[in-house]
Image (cartoon, rainbow, N blue to C red):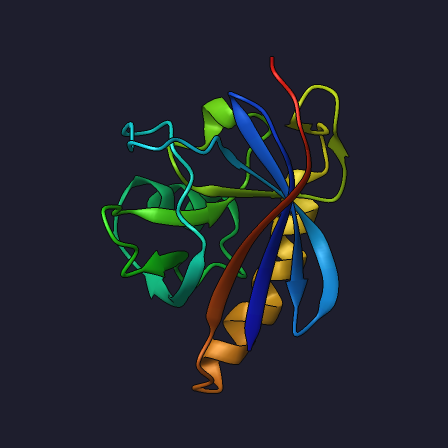
Length: 155
């Protein structure tokens, strides 16, 4: 399974993208901003191809195990990102919820660079069930990240 993030808009605080699963649009993404020199908890991961693994430890895992007891099998972790650790795909609404992670949502506010309230959890659960099913089938799951921002704005 291929997860593809096509980043389309960024500013000095955050980056918006579109997530595709096997070339079919799934949802929007929100990440931290690009920075030449990484700043911990404030920098998006670089473009590239990464393995997606299941992570069954840590505070996010424990939280989601309680929040989604019927469906949670572990966090989706982006593995082997040079210079980065603990990069997850999870819910959230602003870049302050990210710390380098990838947030998902059904709708975004392109002006404010946020995921609209109430749309992150539905996007996450829908995407998660597809990815976790592929992993259960022993499929390789790759994340392909491409930056093609149409517009860069200052905030």
